[in-house]
Length: 327
Figure (cartoon, rainbow, N blue to C red):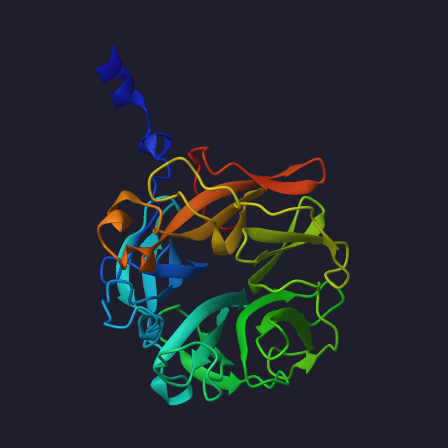
């Protein structure tokens, strides 16, 4: 009977997200994902910061492994099973050696990548010369990228763009300003090229990787606060109310998911909100014998729900329904 049922069950019904969902086969340091639909190839593409997590450095305080990072790429038909697809074809002329935190915004057949660029390789955090900027690139196929412009956001250390089409018209971008106590600010643009920074930060907490999306009748922001993911809710994507506490602030019980959730992407698809986040591996068994195992990071998947007016995610729940092709 079991064999008969297996033969009659569609393959899609047997699919489910594994833990980890994805790990980079080259450096084992996948983080900061951005996911977009490839219309021509009819699949999903994941772009991610490709940390050099397997690099063993003599100085334990050396952070060079977090630099000289390309943008990794993986592909999937359903958002549940991912296959490594190399690194993104990003021109060096307008970017550089260290690339972080891609953000993808798609409109009218054009994909806009907003990419954090750090000028070089640094061995310590917060060096005076270690600036950061956000660069705009475009593509029509998610494969070949062209330089567009470098954003002027009023600071020489801005990272982690998150972009939407604003409900009031035009476009809105959120970002972390490391010169302003790592608060999250936003800027508006009529054309994705010229940006006007607004003076006030979004909320009084330090964070990075802001992701803004519309779901269940409200605008939401999820940001990495290094204590778990902070959540904010808004009616207009301007004024925000902070959700009490954090999500993904309690370690999971399953292997590779036993630490805090970090810097996610959220894909709204077929009325659902799928949360792709990364998790450090410092609490795994391998870390007991390998002193740099904590450098490794993997991608995990959970589904967001609105519970009593706020966002919740059960990291123990198996996601069995993946992404559908957008209409």
